[in-house]
Length: 193
Image 1: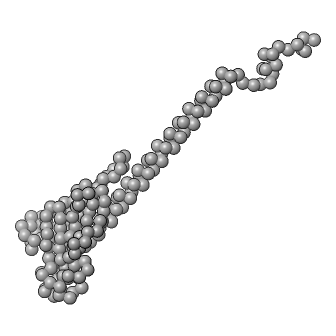
Image 2 (image 1 turned 45 degrees about the horizontal axis):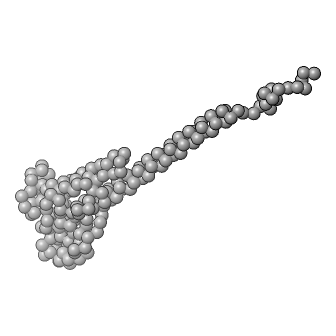
Image 3 (image 1 turned 30 degrees about the vertical axis):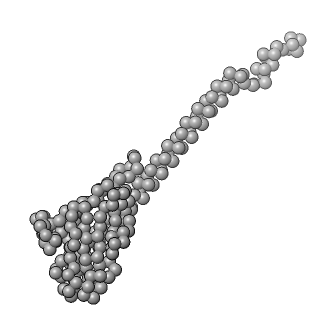
């Protein structure tokens, strides 16, 4: 008959419930794990965004660099010999030229007088007929070096320039490696001078 008179503690143990201390401990652990999970997702999202921005800046710099070097090859193109086409500005920070691309005897059409330079806001600029177009952003360095021949004899005048070494550096968000793009451009149309 002692079974009928079970104590309150024995009755609670038989129901399988949790004590207040156990519930508080479980809630605390769940909260800590939840906060850690959210923080992990935030850090991963930030890394994903930085990587995406780094890729965008790299593609932007490469596209501007490729456009510039491709157009530079046209410097001095003058098939009739009447346009006086050639290199017009050749400094360490800017390069401009004229070319008679439509072979009409003048260098005054679209894309026939072009200059590339780095603006103060770190943007690579393509200037044509006093109109500036941003070609690449986040550029930290643009440098031109001029040679009179393939053995890297420094050019002393615009008429001597046969080869131009181009260096463009750009930055990326923190945690993403920046890069430098370099190439040498032979002014292939100098034969027309």
